[in-house]
Image 1 (cartoon, helix red, strand yellow):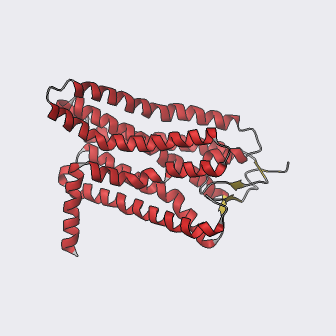
Image 2: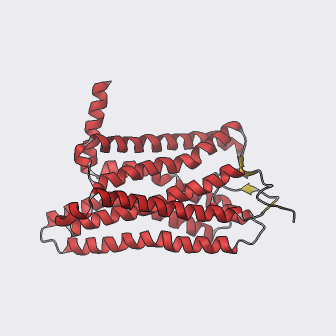
Image 3: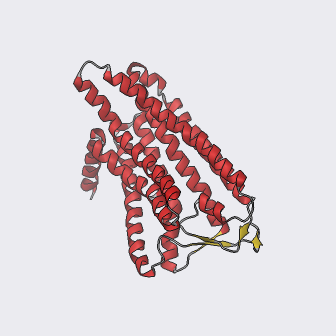
Length: 312
């Protein structure tokens, strides 16, 4: 088989979600609509938190950063897909592909760590309410966000640098709408053991760590709530966690769905559809989850809309 190393490879070809070219206009409209909703929905969340003084707390600081991260996460993949459909060109340069791998890993990892940080915030608020302002001080909050970003970047750089060592075959077609790390590794003709091993180790450390943090936080939260004497206190405590639990379930549920899909089906297009659910749907739905299930957010959005109408 003829090989091309990374210096010779100039571009890959993204095959997208379907071979049916008649479906491309519908896919273009659908993804454009989802992208615009994702951007505007998360921008509204950021504006509501910025303008509402009652929301200037660690919980909503983390939520605003999550919204920024969701905008960036969607922007890494969807615009390139839309441009390719509009230009009737499925190519993506080697540098662009490597950049997508890196930034998807950064923002996906950042979402993972932020959800763990938000779970810890809820743990402190419910289990140690008298020490909440001391523990979740501004310096601590900033440090947790910076450490989340640092570990996400470190994970992404490890994967990206390991891709640089791979040699590729003449078949450079990716059955996906963006450059997914696993699909790129499958195209390689050189030995990919180290890449796959690194994925396993990184998933265990950088994925398993935050998941364990979320699980243990909620074990303590549930234990603390069940000891509360009043049913009203229990309801208030659980209601503060409802939005976060919904987002966690959506993020990890779709991620688990991708894993199951790739394990039980040989269809690469079905795996691509499952990956779409993982990379596109959570950023799209997160603003709706927090705006519909959070009373303080509803009030802040109502005031923001009122101010915007007044300005108009």
